[in-house]
Length: 75
Length: 500
Image 1 (cartoon, each protein chain N blue to C red):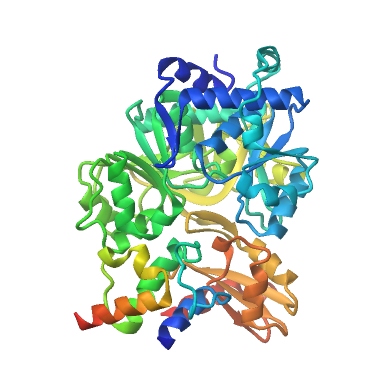
Image 2: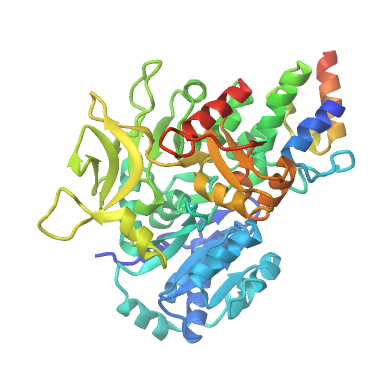
């Protein structure tokens, strides 16, 4: 989780990613962020996020993202 | 002879008044609604003695926004659409340059509009049903010339102040006619628009829609983050034509969405504003083998796009995608040291030229200059600052920039504007900004007591999101070249190495 928060914070230093659960709904993460996130997560966690998983529900909070990473890691 | 862009609306409304013209997917407006409300707004402005002057518009992306644009034009005025998400400091610089007496806004942006300090702030909903003053609108039209301004579009300026490009009816009509012909749009074209309304980029969809009675959907920005949802949206609205910045197309292809989710109705894909990475371009071509692909090129100063290349052949592996040839009625000259050259600065000549920069004679005179090949009479050309060459097939190819202007995520950015914003931050003594074109990152090098975190936070006060550096590094001193200039090349190499 720490590594993920670090990636997110590098994109938006002023956002509290521990608690925010409306990153997409509030327009905090934009399309550039999503591409960067997917690339960095793939590299850092050695997973591949397929296009089918790039949906708002998976990116609305750090927790949702972490769940996605864990799920992909187990598959 | 057509002299006013509103004639497109006036003839289309007779042909298909109840056809959907513009829509967000949820809310739309027909040609008749747009015609009626824009004439109301025009009448309101005319009755309040606005004429031949700028009116600022701060509204969310919606068909109403276009209606406000054309309402302003009906009054014989010109609009400046302001990005509502832009930091306050940058907005006030633009407003100062423009000094509009009135602002039109929607309810959501009322607070922002009020803060601008214009004499009058009008809510769209309050003026869109105003009683039409036929006489006033007819009088205005009779007085107008095709050289009257339609809009001012603000673009990044190297000294920190954005430049306002003024476009008149004649260049927008010229663009509309030649674009529709070259890209073969018709009344069945359904556009999926991506670019924001505060640039000249959406003219590609808006003007052909008006001229041909086509339809344009404003795709919600959020969808560009989620490729599969985006493809679903394209299918749902049977969108057959897209003119997007390259980064939006790459967004879909790079996340691997094209493999199992190919847009069903797409037959035309136009792209531009930056280089298309070949791998991503090939993914698109493979996914849509039947579709026509066009590379578009052109500066805001020559109204929308100036050149196009239709992908009518396979490119060799290391061949850059050409920018092709100019639209009809536009001429491109490559100039090196005031002479025509095989490789040189791309200069543009023709009706497509805009009028220059608003309230900025010096910058206008520097970029809109006498054609050096013509010494007999006054004739302006626009110097793009881009270097190009002609390939063996006679197609124009973009090589590089002469200065420090870059294209990032489809946005045209002067690195100088970022540097001058950095220098406004407390504890920054000197700064140099470079673009890592491989990693597509803006990198800022700063000297001073401040920290990268503090600089990053402070820059948000001055710059729109797309101009913020991806990385900020502190240096003890900036490196200099032998002749005393900042060593930009060295810093660029340093930035490119940092990631690899």
